Every structure is written in structure tokens, then in C-alpha cells.
Image 1 (tube, rainbow, N blue to C red):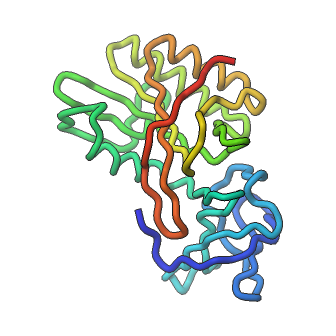
Image 2 (cartoon, rainbow, N blue to C red):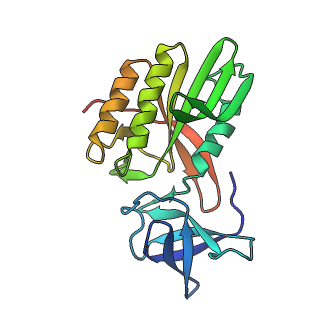
Length: 228
């Protein structure tokens, strides 16, 4: 995936979860942040960030903050991107072969999953989660409590019991990490639900991404560690 009109800036502060103040070429701008998560370990003052300039002259904010530099890597923060990346990945992977049907946002029970897929006799649900939380090359999800995430996991377990296949796909929006593990310190219930889902037959996948200032693509499979 390639962004258009990327420009570099320096992060100043984030007044709320929707916008940030960024210095762009010496001028302070209010920009839209394409991630409503906390991202406190990424968006710290003086951090280099990358923004996409909108081509819509009527927008209140002219820029979208899409990624930031942390240490030696760029972390993509665009929460709308993981689903798009997985849809592209599905066309060139070998885990689910002979796909004949893909539908975005399929309802099952009281949840709406990101993808429903048919491949021969296989009927498959995929729920996608973007991962931006990193510490010492270990990546985790979530970065804040998510009861919605717990509900999705439990619904996928029920789907497996009814004969569906189910995957939770963690898109690690950075490169060169050691492994993925649920963030027990952020939401213990989510971590426990994920471990139980794995035992019940839900497939847990994690892949990292090659990220530049203006491109992102799913790259390599990442080890998933569910044990404490």
C-alpha cells in the first residue's frame, strides 16, 4: 500500500484522541490522528511523524498523521490500514488455498467480523487487529481494555463449535520484532480469552509489516506466545 503526498513533521502534543498538534516546516498545524488508541509510547514530544496531505480542500484538518518514528523503526499507526493489508495478503498467501468468495464485515451472532471466506467446503471467519504497542522488540495487543475485543474472541469460539474455521490476525504495523504476546497488563481478560480461544481451535496469526514513510506491506510471520 502506498500513501500519497506524505510530508514529515515533528509531534508536539495530542489534545484528544482525534487530533494532534504537529510542527510542519516551522508552522504548527492541527492534524487528524488515524488511530484513536492511546499510543502514548509512540507519540511523545519531538517525535518525527509522517503525515498524508488531504486533497479535499473542505476538510477541517489538512493532514492525517499515519506513522511515527520510534527508535530505529517507523511504526504505522493508521487503524484503517490493517483490513486493507489483509485483503491484499489473502490474494498471495498459502494458508487458505483456493478461495472462491471473500466478504468484508460479515455478521455472526452479535458480532461483525472483518472477513468471511469460502474455500471449497471451508467456511472461515477472520478478525483483524492492528498492533502498534512495542517494548524491547516485543509487540502486544491491546494498548487499552477492549470488551469489544473479548466479545469477538468468544463469538469466534462459538463459530468454531458450529463448524466454521476462525482466525484472529494481528497485523504488526512495524518490522523486526521478536514475538507477539497479548498485553496482560493492559487487559488480562482479553489475554485469557485469546489463550482459551487458541485451545478451542481458533487460529492465532501475527505478521509484521515493512514500513517506510509512504508505504506499508505485510511481510513475515511473527511468533505468537500465549503463555505467561
